Image (cartoon, rainbow, N blue to C red; front, side):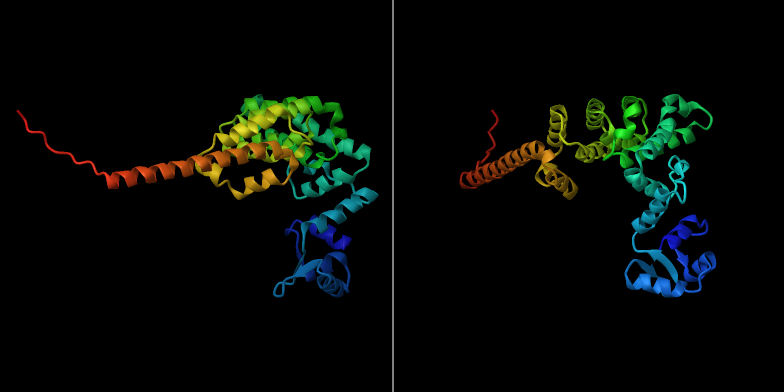
Length: 303
C-alpha cells in the first residue's frame, strides 16, 4: 500500500488515482491486479469498473503512508510545499503532529520565515501578491498543524501574534483575515483575545462566524470574548434569535465552553418568544373589541 500511495502522490499526470495498468508499469509488479483486488475487498481502495482507476477510499490513507516514510527517513518531507499550498500540504499537517521535536521546530521555523516578511507594503511591490500568498498559506498551516502542539512556535509566538493582529487591522482582504482568525488557536492568550474581539467587531458576517468557530480552540474564553459573542448574537434579527441556523445551534451546544453564551442566548429566545406571543394576544384583543364596538364616522354638517 505504501508503494501505491507514493506512486500516486509522485505522479504529475493525475490526481490521487491511477489505473491498474499505470500502477503495474510504475511499480514493475505483475501481481498488482491481485494486490488491488485484495485492497478493494478490504475496502481500503476502490476501483472504477470501466477505467480501472484505483484510488484510496479516503485521502488519509495516502497521507498516512507518506508520513510513515518521512518519519523513517526514507524520504524527506517537502517543506517547500507549504507556502505553495500543494497537495503535500495536508500530509505535512499530519507529519507536524507526530514529528520529532527538532523536525517540528524546523517545520515551524520554515513557515515563520515566510510569514515574517509579510507586511502591507508587499501588496504595492512587483510580485508582492505572490509573496503575501506564501505568507498566508504558511500562517494557515501553522494554525492547523500546531494547534495541539504549540511548543515549537515558542521562539516567535509573540511576533506571530503581532502579524495576525496586523492582518486583521491593516489589510482589507477578507480571505486573509479569515485565515488569521483561524490561527488564534496557536497564539498567546492576549493575542488570541485581541484577534477574536477584532473579528467579532468586524462588519463582515463571514469573519464573525469564523471567530465563533475559532473559539473552540481555547480551553476557556475570556470574559470580554464571552460578552462580545453574546452581544453579537443579540444584535441579530428577532427572526434569527427565534430560529437560529443549524450550524450555530451545533456550535453553541457542542462544547461547555459556550455555556454562558448559550444561557444568555436561550434567555433572549425566551424573552423574544414572550414578547411575540404577548403582541399577538394584544392584537387579537384589539381586533375583537373593534368588531364588538365598531366606530362609525359621520359627516359633520358645515355651517
